[in-house]
Length: 138
Image (cartoon, rainbow, N blue to C red; front, side):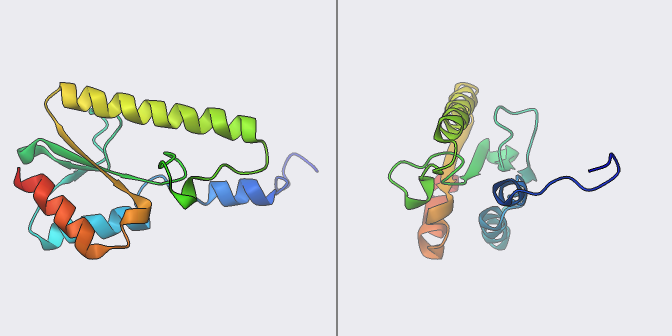
């Protein structure tokens, strides 16, 4: 391959590269739901620990919409480690989980209320609606 030609493509790399960090389908679903309920919010405030997905400053509340794989949702079928390079993935995902826990702890210490919604739970609209409204009503 010459310097100007395209890079080699590997299926796993291509798949992982296609996964979005922002504006994921579960996030968009929760945002539409919040907007329909009349809530206004900010997105990805980088000045807050963990850069929460949804921030409701007037209620001092944040919502994280976690991907089950990336944040290793305990007991979830989507949180399975890949068979290829398990030591790499174990370490990487372990660091994601630790970073997430630290962010939640720092937000709570700063008097922010935190709700974590998991990707696998987003499919049940009524359950998500109930959780979100109870969380924001406090």
